[in-house]
Image (cartoon, rainbow, N blue to C red):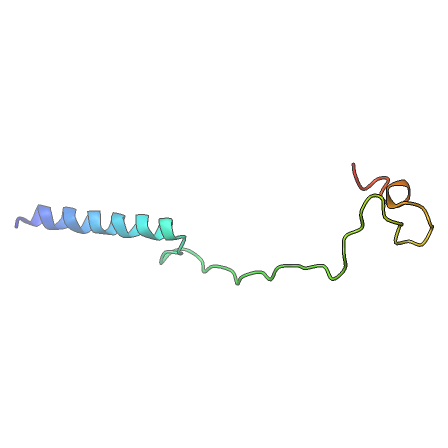
Length: 72
């Protein structure tokens, strides 16, 4: 096998590896490491519906009280 064929094969192998890394989303040697995974934020309570009483205690419906500007 001539020398030119070996260098071409090595170049194609490197490009194939780089393409596989990009496809897998893995960082390369020169890339900075991936950040740690972020924990999902979960709410404890049930969401307030538009027609439910307002949680502020006014006695009005949420849509007429605190939810008035929340929809915009």
